[in-house]
Length: 295
Image 1: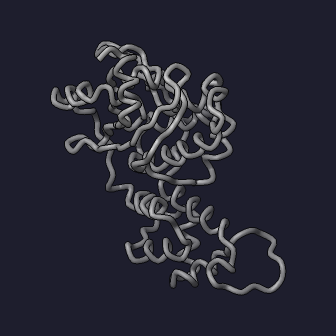
Image 2: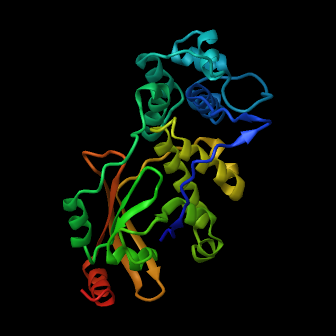
């Protein structure tokens, strides 16, 4: 299971050459994403024939423009990050032409419509009802995660399974799902499939970041991960995108042995920045957890 630790909140501004660093605009991100998607396809995958060897991998811009039925100069402007605003129809055509997955299609539309997506200035407080729900789910591990992947609230089973500190509302440095799994060398040694899991987490983090293009802390986190993680530095520019889905989880705990869960994640209706993560234990796993956390 993915490990965790605190990721410090910071309001510092990065400075380079005496000037504030400019954030990569969403137009540039949209262009980079389309370029990566284009380069990973072969002409044969989209029904095109070629003559001879190519100097560069993937499809050419003019080929994508042809498949999407848009002008080459228009498509080039999008890829170059110019201030153009493709219509819904154009985006749908590009997504189909580039054979984007459902996750990638959603990501494309988030990038293209980023001006309509504003980050909430502050979080709403977690309601008493939601707090009681998390604690009542014991011995099924449950926690609430925000857009930074900070864990704001967790129950006893989650504390045991994910090695969270004992929960207290006064804890200033909240556990962070992504930072610890990506950076902590001990957790890397404990997970045989660490690299594949980390790649999936990077893809999910990118999907989440698209919803908050102007959030300074997210931008700082990305820069920090680039500095501290070789895998992140290599994998982030690939524009892999994946959303969190309900799934079946199996793993071995050093104390309890084999554990089995059904994982679901729910978005809090009145505060979409928050997610309720629930791991529903199988009957045998539930009995093991009851004994361990004294329920």
